[in-house]
Image 1 (cartoon, rainbow, N blue to C red):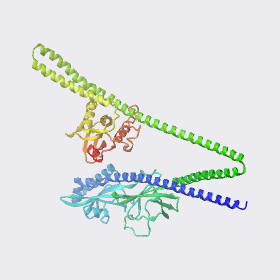
Image 2 (image 1 turned 90 degrees about the vertical axis):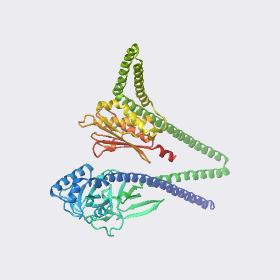
Image 3 (image 1 turned 180 degrees about the vertical axis):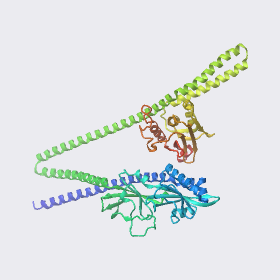
Image 4 (image 1 turned 90 degrees about the horizontal axis):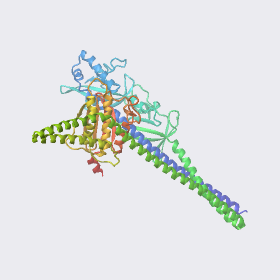
Length: 604
């Protein structure tokens, strides 16, 4: 007994050490996997946020140069006249309303504001001098200037785009557009992640969290550019402890009232506005996963240790009593049988879930195909009246020509008979082409993407929609290229997308008093081929929702809101994309981007 007690204590200690090691290893692996997944998701979310920010900024970047070409602003900057100031103020006020900018103002070459969109507001810039602002200095140097600051007069954060105004071959002023950053931030307010953008001074200038704005990441005592942040008090964020875990940056915060206690930090440069994007994702999920994986590893180790212990007991019991060893063996076999049965049941359940998922995916694909086919049949129904008219005209003409041919034969005027039969053949060819397009459009297309002539797709779609276009009195502006434009896609499915866009445009323009115009533009680029369809309707009320399933602005009974959603899936299945937005001059414009055949072959 004296020698067995220390040996037993040693075995217990070794078992505890093994279990602790397994727990630590499992926890480390679980934390690494979880933290890596969080980082990957954060990069994807931050990339989308940066892309969205860049696209919103691009809307305003060229506005100063375009608006600076206006004769009224050029004349005012050359020789300011009192009568022109009010006209220029109202022009800039309208431009601000249309573009969504915060302010637009014109300065002379001394930096003094001579016209502004906020002329009627208490914070008017009229008469103020901004020759010290970098965006004025850079613009006067001949650059398209971009700059961010807190307005001295408005005390509002903004991003400024500036460009020179020229008259009589010389620079006469600078036009500046101030972008409302709060409008951009509103899009991100409900995001669970903390998102912010800092400038070169480590000042957070843009964020979806109010507590982050105009706070500093670095030393709050280091000097800042004079007047860039107006009179705002720029303080540092609460104390942050930084560390690296499995190649990822981790921030620990002491003040958790406004910040997550521990989070993964992902950063990305935003060259367009000279800032750095940051996103913080709480690491709670990764820490919970670490505990679960550690517990699982320790449990598995415990099972192994328990098994070894049972075997050891069996060997000792064999020395003491054969009957007890047999009984222990039987109990162990029963335990193994129960676990094996449970494992089989688990495996069977997993196989059943896999089969159920496969069936669900097959059902989803079938429903999608049926929705696509239903959309085509709906389009055929809408075009039925026009197509009937297209077929009735040549049929009537053929009947007339046949009757006259019989008379001509009786009179032995065979030259006229030949001419009539030629006309009948031409009419029959025309009818055959219409019917061929209908048959091709109505059939199901399940083949993979091939080389498709986009010009032929548009021509066929216009031909099938000719009845509706004629009935609506719509003017179609379409100048097809002389040569085919080949892209990757499906002839019928792309034709359905174009017909759906034409149909939506006609519905949008229906009932308006002005002319109904549909403009189709095809651009063949080296990297992508685009087809845009622009209408003269009222535009889109919610451009960011037009591709959502079941979203529709039509009255009840006129549509399910699936046409654009199906079109989006069709174009995406060919590796392309489709966007919808309001055109600056009025109406809506939808742009379909596809892969050129030449680029696809080069990649292959």
